[in-house]
Image (cartoon, rainbow, N blue to C red; front, side):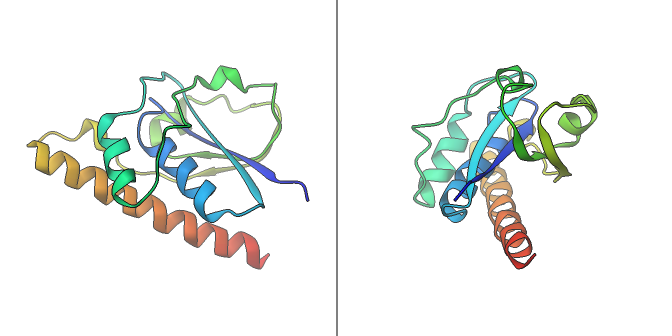
Length: 143
């Protein structure tokens, strides 16, 4: 069985796209091969690692990557931008892309507040991404 490659793209590849990659790895079974990248990779945010560990997902095998590592080198069945900035800045012609989708999630790393409030924002976005991945998988599998 050929796995559909899915690239999650955001600006920093530090939170949202990393979470989406991990959740698709968890729920996608043998049908999908998830990747993530950023337009300006910053390294995985420590809060991203922490809130993913809270739901039993280790990110030890993941790292921030620049989208140029994949452009024109890997064919992706799906390119999914997870923030408005990536959608606006990503080249409209991206070689090797089957389908392009936009899922816009708030950037938890940009949230201003106490440490507890910041962690709460990361958890909120994590939960939104997990639910979106599950809904998308149900939709794709039904077609």
